[in-house]
Length: 284
Image (cartoon, rainbow, N blue to C red; front, side, top):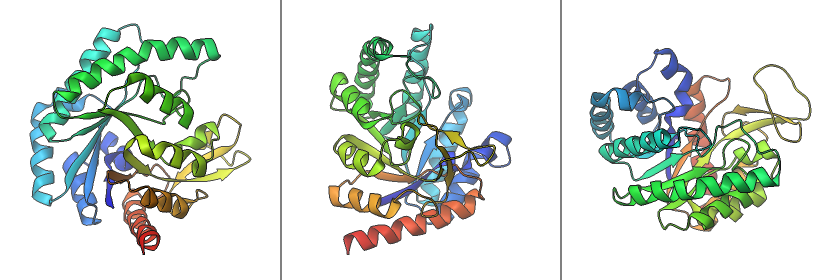
């Protein structure tokens, strides 16, 4: 298993400036990860070109691969041309970093369609944009992906439909084993259905409650409450999900993505150890 960590696991420290990207690489390398996923949810890499070289060289010096590049995007926005140009610039950054997998969103995370007609209209709008970006990425040797993320393109059926509609060999799925809960889809059903289209996998865990325990909990479409936690400490059947990934023959990068309240350094180290143990059990 090619097991690594998303820099998003340290998003709070990166946003506050208490950790730099090189600090994050050091922390992930010390935890024993094979790779780092670069989650660039701001345009900092576009504004600071020297940072691109610094991150690439530092990762190489620490012996960790840069395996995936993650950005947000909203193709429902009026300035579609500006959005396209921005994503292309990030694709060029990923190429400079030596990264061959790239995730972009298609709508804002929190947006959800009002009805089937709005879904169909939105899908028709985003498919040619995804095709154009995948074609640009192909010239860079990059596979583009969309994640089951937020409340629009999240459940496995919608993601599979998008991949089929875009119909590009280098356009696939970033499969997050936990995010299906946002729309209350069972990960044990959704993960094996999605794995054949996956280029990258996110491993995460959630606490799940049928009431709202307090601030910080996300409300799912069906009204349940979920909160990120350390991989192996929550209510997701992570051990069984790792077994499904192993049985599928998936050989791409698998990244721990932590978004809970615990210390991220402890969460990443513990989550990596748990994931490796589950993989060893599944492949014994």
